[in-house]
Length: 357
Ligand SMILES: *Cc1c(COP(=O)(O)O)cnc(C)c1O
Image (cartoon, rainbow, N blue to C red; front, top):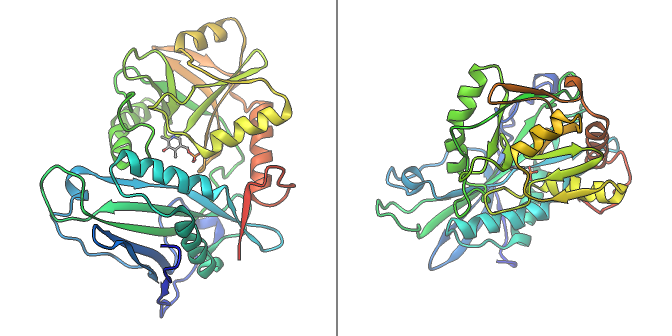
């Protein structure tokens, strides 16, 4: 794989780029995409960058029937000096292979795909927006393509990388959201696919999301699938609680997705000397800490929003209002620090950013 050349076909026409205040999440795509294929005989082959275009698949392609697929999500940021930075992209490559392992998809050469990703971003560099809070979202994904209706692992695959300029998650600055503690539906269970970034987890989460939205909540808090007692994630983000000066987050128990942002937050807190623990946390413990006046801050973490403060948790009709529904000072400090590092505005203490050039 290492010495395979990436074939590049340049797009003949260039699309108009949207104004930076018109950007949404994931609606428009750049001029080029990366693709490569897999077969049992050849392994991963024909790595190529081509004009962004629809693909043709056999209706029997296994992806349509049994959902054997994985994806990643990361961003490229434009700095004041017009450099383009990626944030810990090697972690996404590593996680792609962990997801592959769980979904019986062949492993990729992480260095090779990261290099392909950089070449693609470099080619479509003009698409990396510069306004505050904007970025270029990068979506690598793999689908199973063998035309076969038997339930088995596919013998052929396609890996693609597409790019989408995205607007600021927070148009009016970081603000807290209301969260509904989900009692009926579960996202994942130990032994299932919760720790893999695979489509089925998100399809399974839509129903709860729909129900909670109707009740005026923006996301659900997922509890464990067995006792429905231990906290797992919030929407498709990891979750942190600040209780009496200490920060806790659920430990990676096999059903939780190991977020890159989660890991970065833990590292930052340790560096700052803020006590942080990864352990099992029950919803009862959170409720007790709220009753005792010790629940100081709650926030979700993920690439899209970076930090998403929680202003209210509704647990069986009990409304826990956190920090008067305002963004806590630690949440704000983490947000400011991570976004400054990502945008090259602050020294990269941990060597997290990688320049695309
Ligand atoms: C992607 C994802 C996260 C956050 O991961 P990051 O690497 O921080 O973006 C958390 N939970 C779920 C379920 C996810 O899919």
